[in-house]
Image (cartoon, rainbow, N blue to C red; front, top):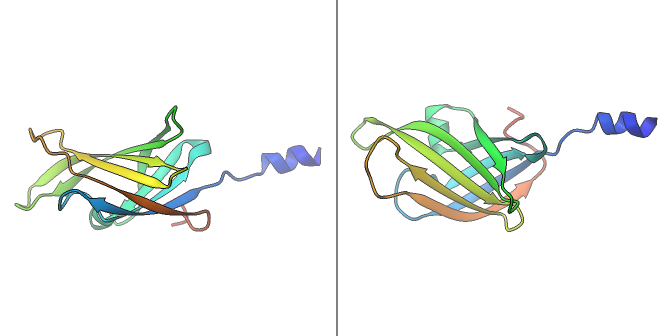
Length: 134
């Protein structure tokens, strides 16, 4: 009986990935991205330079675990372009938790452009503080 009570109060582990990205072009992709992932409850939060300046706090993002065991996260933002206009940007992040590698792609759904800014890089992982603590 004690085992059942202890199992019922267990907290899901939230892992936080602090990632440094190599950007393939300037702009749209931050050099640093922090992700807190609660895979058991299928939820995640993201934080980067754009989120910091536009929202000021971590952003809840869509999350799913793929068949390959990677984590896919998606979020949308309005980001100021160099001319000051706000541009809709769809971000897709794919994290390989085994390799601790992040790939991030930006797409522009309302503009007919062929480029897809992207970045990739390694992540350090911790189970201490998370973006859910704030």
